[in-house]
Length: 258
Ligand SMILES: Nc1ncnc2c1ncn2[C@@H]1O[C@H](C[S@+](CC[C@H]([NH3+])C(=O)[O-])CC(=O)[O-])[C@@H](O)[C@H]1O
Ligand SMILES: O=C(O)C(=O)Cc1ccccc1
Image (cartoon, rainbow, N blue to C red; front, side, top):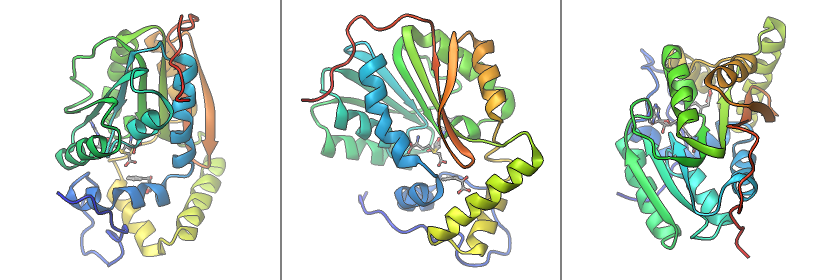
């Protein structure tokens, strides 16, 4: 398995039939380029994970990164926090993603406690955790599974625990949403995607990536029992929320690297 990463050209030639989008080997091979050029604010959200953890994570606690893909969330945390500050468990269904995430952690942060599980976040037995990261993953689950997953994550969180939930979102108002989607397509065009690539990927993602409104996310978090949730980041139709299990703060927060 090579660690090379390619430019995303998956939808650059006309396809007779556009297949449903999946996280197969073709996507794994160009994923860093695809996500960086397709998700507004991706790097900024990752950059905040370590800072959020250093305020909210109990020293030494477990961090889950659900739908970890190539482990970018884990790398961001290991870049900010000392090896004894946390234990990381990344989970992903895609074998290609899991294999490459393991290689990356072994090469980039051998001192940190980084584990990657090939598994389904809907059925995984969770250990108690101080922080759970769901970066652009809930949107790929069937709507009917989302409430149950969030409820299980609430149960897994320790007192003082936080959930970071990043998602593509849809605006409830049709005009507002149309403006966001048009500007999102401008964003993709500015990042080198052609109209054909934008349109074919949109087809591939239909009924695969189904975004909720911010209101639906906050309501689901409240329903699961979270004491409070807030949107801390939004860039066009992509947002990140933080949800607090309760009003406790960790006794000894994870220390940042010196
Ligand atoms: N049921 C499931 N169980 C486990 N994994 C799943 C499931 N369904 C989908 N996945 C996995 O969730 C990931 C979503 S990508 C996350 C980016 C990452 N967080 C990042 O910060 O780079 C988002 C995107 O590409 O827009 C893929 O790797 C899937 O295999
Ligand atoms: O490209 C898109 O249209 C997206 O919504 C973001 C995305 C990024 C990576 C995989 C799937 C979707």
